[in-house]
Length: 608
Image (cartoon, rainbow, N blue to C red):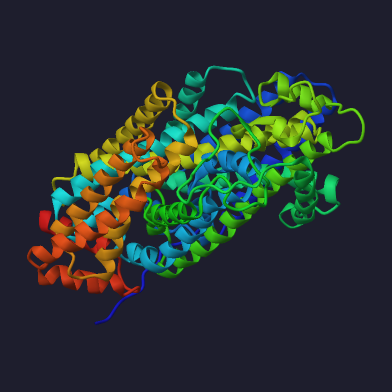
């Protein structure tokens, strides 16, 4: 059997274009610093750092307009590995992960590593078990892949309906975190901030779909990474004289650890299934930073890690992005970049938490009378930080800090210019827009391709197909915005539930669809439905206090239940036909023509 290797054309000027964007973004930040030094009003500074970058993102998205379905749904299959990996790293856990995890590290220390390890392992598993083969198949959405893989329209519709639920949860979480960051610019209501974000997402992505997303989210991810790295690097220089916070935070942690022991912070021995992540609002410093298994039990740590592994590896807003790379080699390479960049971001937020603890430690370990600095009063006035010493000398356990404000408070604590604070807040907004855009476009494509047009394999006319896709994008974003406004739930909790639902429902079926030929449409349908329903029931039971466990651990029951149901039903029903067995063999061969494109071309010829 002969194969012809086909790759998309990659624009050789992409590096130049994004170099220009980085220069413009840096110039905008420097101009804001200059304005602040000249005494320009704070309103002007806020407007510059808030509206300026958003205008750049929207311009990139609108300039990527297309009327070609392949460009709209797969960015023409010519996105280089680095840019794909950059966006995958940013959108895996999004702004929710950056903001809430920073606060979690600050409040409970190393116990939050379960989420970091799970995300990194998810990229590795995706690169080994799923991404190359999904790229070879080339489907635009996960339900489209499952429908064609098992030649079942019913499975396609079932998967589309089930996957829409966790995607809505992630989208709502990102909109809420983005709205929280906007509050650092303007004290507007959360509802108005959410509607603003929805409008920006639709305006940026409607013109070019995945093509607009590929380039606008690359710019947003660069902005988010710069906004994360710059403030903490400055703090690292101030504290350690070394501009590498990922390395210099270690000696600071040893100093903090000695102070924690002297302050009497407890060493906690939790139950095996304890999962006590800090929630929204003010939370006390619960334990010593480097003390493992204080808020998260050992078994819960393993369960959450595996849940994140399965959820990230099979996430329907991440996996289809590899279909936009020029080839299978680039798909694998993009996961390598994603792992590297995700690891750098997670090491950085851990450094932010350590430096914040160090600043608070300096207050309570000073000899003589404790005096609170000006930044403490500022954060206390804003409701971000509180102290309860009961009339005595305050200790570390006396402080309560808002989890979702730790990341943005570091420039304030280090007494940096207001422009740096707004730079950090703008980075969180950029991260929220990138992740919300990725989820919204994936959900819109599922609604248009797998639900509206899911009853037929024949491709519709390009004009009507793209109109439906753009309307579905707007509907998905608006629905998620409505959910974020009417059901205000902890964003980190929403993210963990969504990843648990995704991993339990789709991960076993996706892996088996590639590596076990005996799996048929009945087994795949049973696996998806069982994993989803069992996980939903486990989440409800956990949140209602019926099981005594957190809802984030629901995948511990749902994932094996889905796998067992898929295998048992497949073995109890007829084996798949020969053509589907040959399709699996073709999927496993990394080279050659993209199977989905070949199938669509043949269907168009039959239609003619």
